[in-house]
Image: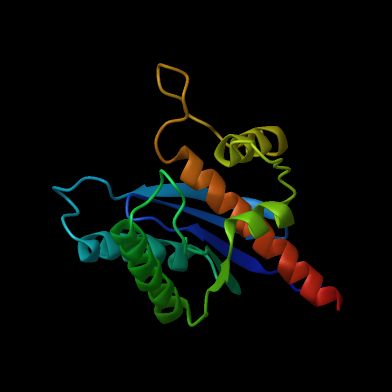
Length: 182
């Protein structure tokens, strides 16, 4: 009998972290963890503590064999994040990645967003809005996943992070399956 692999995919951010569990190519659970409230999460450490409690909940329900994490940005893009934002994001990515290693005894594998989208089969052409294309992909391929919208018709905060974590988990699943074939 073929061994099944349970995979955790994470899209880590200091504001909202997406998390998805996949087994045998099937999405078992997907959600997001909101840490934007400065009153409840005044520091990066408070945010980390919250993410750790969520990871512990996942640990009580799932036995992971692999963890994939979206690699944090390494370079500037005009009109996007500042050096301080990139540094904070990298620090938080490292904190959560270490928590995964500590809680699950699994070294998380980093995967770039562009590579993950390609592995998962999300077609993005030059000039396309990657976040919109990922959302469309999830809606088309996984109609059972509930997508919530604001009264203005935009995806509610956290939805895109959840969708990104699905793509990370799907990419990890494909990489694991390919490794088993060779």
